[in-house]
Image (cartoon, rainbow, N blue to C red; front, side):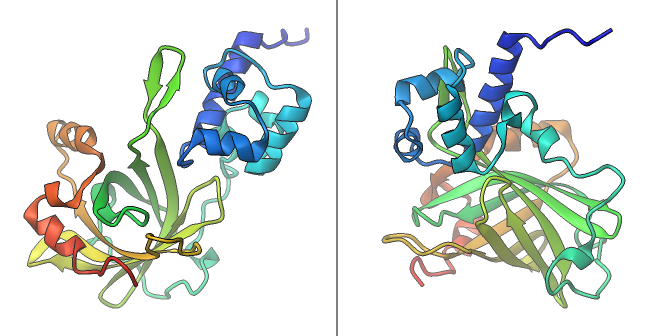
Length: 264
């Protein structure tokens, strides 16, 4: 017996979720609509699951984000998921280290990080990351939360940017190579163990592979801290995530982030 046809309302919500993910790292939805060539009000209807785009508009959306029309039928997490029988390998990373990873110095688990903004030097992102070991690879999955939420219908959705990456062991620290699943821009970071004698902190620098625009920076400071396992501590950290003025950060973090000049 053939499977029943999909519910149009469900398909609209699948598209809406996918579009919210694809636009999560866009600074301005209005500018994005102008680049794609779609009406801003109508695009809001797509984001809220209230309407489908016409075929020609869908073609422009897919071309802009370099995805195919499966975004109408399938969640992006399933489209982008790797084959289950094959785990990522550290050997796939260019210039991967031959050193075995020191899991004692950087155990798997949840971490929080503070990264000075590339676009707003007086602000910093406070995010969370999951570090896990899969096969021989040490993997990173981190999230930046943005100031401008997406409004869909009567609800507001936090804008976030997801970074997937691989950690590589170095002599006295570790390197991180990461990128978003929506663009070819990469972040390359280096962390050394400890910060002012605190072994659960890691301090370093982060570089973004993007042309430097006026009043922006391509190199900035980053600090990471291993989180305790208590649920209350994790929830408190999650609620504190987002963008804020560097002057509002704890003194230890503020000092570490200002060690790198604003413009290089």
